[in-house]
Each structure stands twice: as structure tokens, then as C-alpha cells.
Amino acid sequence: MRKTYVSVIAFFLVFNLISLQEFAQSQGHIAPISIRDPWARTSLVSTSAAFMLLTNNQAQDDTLVRAEADVCETVELHTHIKDGDVMRMRPLKDGIVLTAHHSVSLKPGGLHIMLIGLKRPLLEGEKIFLKLYFHKAGIVSLAVPIRKPIYKKVPGNSPCGCKNSPPKSTIARKLR
Ligand SMILES: [Cu+2]
Image (cartoon, rainbow, N blue to C red; front, side, top):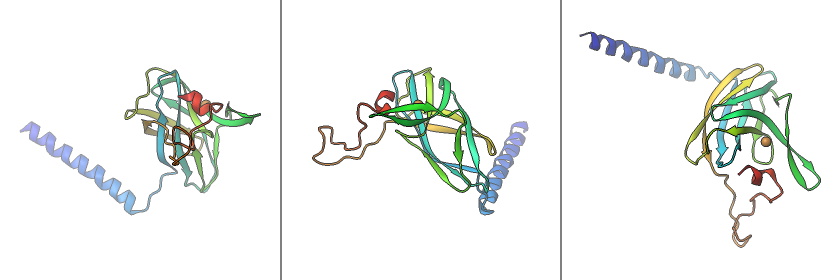
């Protein structure tokens, strides 16, 4: 009898949760920051990186101040700068600025979330968990799928058949 009572309450709790979500969507509620296509690079070494498209839906600028990950000791926000013919990574101590109503792409060879001191290999198909700390929007937690980088295949090109594979000098190669 008591079990049935608990089940009924659980049902209504779940029902209410779903209803609230549907209500928020129907009211056109938009998160302050939306995140599309998050992914982290497969890695068998001690470092990797995470990428995604961040969109600031707010009427004010915001900043991604820092990030945390369950899978590594340290997380840094990085960019790349050209140093002669070599692309080098640089930490962004002031974070990544997100202009109001604009998107910023974190991608290989550009801005990225650097994962340092990995506690385990990052294998394709698995996930890591990230916490992103925004100055205005607060904390956003997300699951990030692990995958290999995708390069466009161009027929008759290099032996590997991939035009956009990173040159040996780039950090993308070093991150593997
Ligand atoms: Cu980096």
C-alpha cells in the first residue's frame, strides 16, 4: 500500500517536471548561453581539448571565465597565435569574451578548452563532464562526447585523402 502511494507521488513529480519544461519552451524561454556541438578530442596522452559553439543570448556581453572537468587536473582557456610558421597555444587569463547576441566558435587551431593532466584516456564514444563558469550567466554543466577530429576528404589529394588534416607544425597534431 505504502509502495503504491510513493509510486503515485513519484508519478506526479515527474509529470510536473515535464510540464514545467514544456511550459518554459512554450513561453519561448531561451537560456542566457546556448551551447551547440560540444566535443572533446580523443587522447591517449595527458592532454586534450574541448570544442563547441557558444552563443550569448543575453542583451549584455558575457565572459567565459574558467572551466572545470571531471577527467583532468587542470582546465585552461586557450587560443592560438602564429609564431613564425608555427601556431602556438596561449592561455587566456581574462577568459573568452562573448559579445551580446553573438556566437563564438571554439575549434581546433583556434579558441579551445585545454584539458591538462588527464586521469584516463579519452576514448571515442565516451563522454566527459564540463562545468563552464560565465561572469553573468553563472555555471553551465554539460556532457561532452569524445570523438576523433573530422577532416574533409578531397579525392586525389594527399595519400591520406584529407585536405584539411593539420600540418605537423600545428598544435592540433600535438594534442592527439
Ligand atoms: Cu591549448
